[in-house]
Image (cartoon, rainbow, N blue to C red; front, side):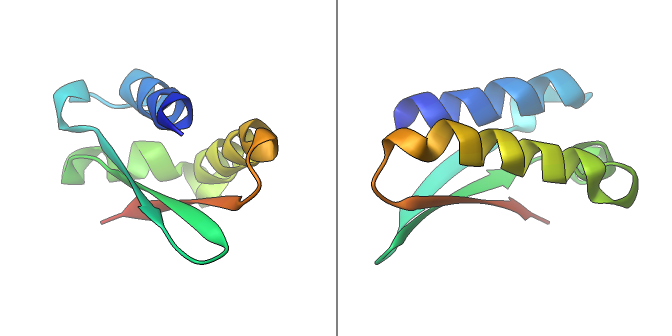
Length: 79
């Protein structure tokens, strides 16, 4: 799970202006693992992207990388 958190953090740090504010935490639920991504308020638009395209791409990467886990992995971008 740490590899997946590091992957999300690496991609998010490349997108934002303030990479020190990027934080990724994992919350384990019954059937899913929720990765919570938080960035600086000014960088939120860069992580979400135009019409949510960047966020959708991030979620696709997480879904593809999570195939080796038995649980579903979901990415939430916190405001």
